[in-house]
Amino acid sequence: MKKYAPAIALFAVFEAVAIALWLTRDNIFYLFNFSYIGASVALGVGLFIQGGKNARRITQLLVGLYMLVFLGLISGENMQIEGFWYYLFVGVFEAAVIHYAVAKIFGPLIFGRGWCGYACWTAMVLDFLPYKVPAHSRKKIGWIRYITFAASLAFVAALFLAHVGNIERIMFWAFIVGNAAYYAVGIVLAFAFKDNRAFCKYVCPITVFLKPMSYFALVRIKCDHDKCVQCGKCRRVCPMDVDMLDDSRKRENGTECILCLECAKNCPKKAL
Image 1 (cartoon, rainbow, N blue to C red):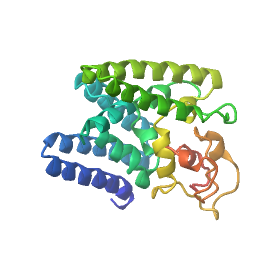
Image 2 (cartoon, rainbow, N blue to C red; image 1 turned 90 degrees about the vertical axis):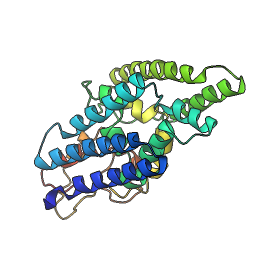
Image 3 (tube, rainbow, N blue to C red; image 1 turned 45 degrees about the horizontal axis):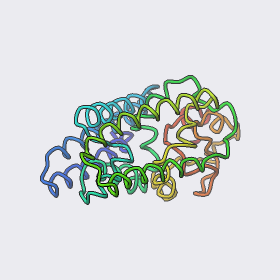
Image 4 (tube, rainbow, N blue to C red; image 1 turned 120 degrees about the vertical axis):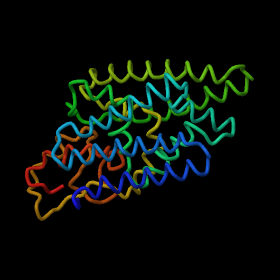
């Protein structure tokens, strides 16, 4: 069981959050919600340790579909960034605020951008496209993410400032329209740049939260330089253009590692 320690540890972290929120919020839903997500993540990590080729994708589908279909479409919660702003303006620590706090603001201090690799329902669809390895070097248009970030905040703020009625219903439709727009833009960019993760690199507003916190992540890919033969295969297969051979926190695109473990799977010397 020792080799499964990472999977067990991840489940323990999510279970601790689940129990804490259940007891403090007096709502058993949080126990189910975070226990389910923790179990899904632990399953994926466990399957990877066993050598499963689709381990990450299984977790991605389990968590992504749960949040998109059950929480979003069925339960009517806007789990996009607009939902986060909405609950902040209302002054309620619920739904999207808790989700963002755990997965995208404080969680990355532990697992970096693991959310992007194992749970994001936008990337869940984009990862099915054919360009899993970027065909070209990264474009210098990452500033677009700050525009989408500001636009999402401005949209929700405008609704409150204009005293628009039935904002909660608007948030539901914003979730549907927003997701459709994300998928459309993500697919167009993937084919235009021959890169499935182009949307994540240039447009996704969530990265404004993820990038600074991921710099301090405890869970990181590191290189055993005694084993490494400098073949460069890890850098060629990385969907996020991360330089895995540099162990420093300042490595190129270091805050964008999604822990997909493609580098580790493809390393001929098991140095990662």
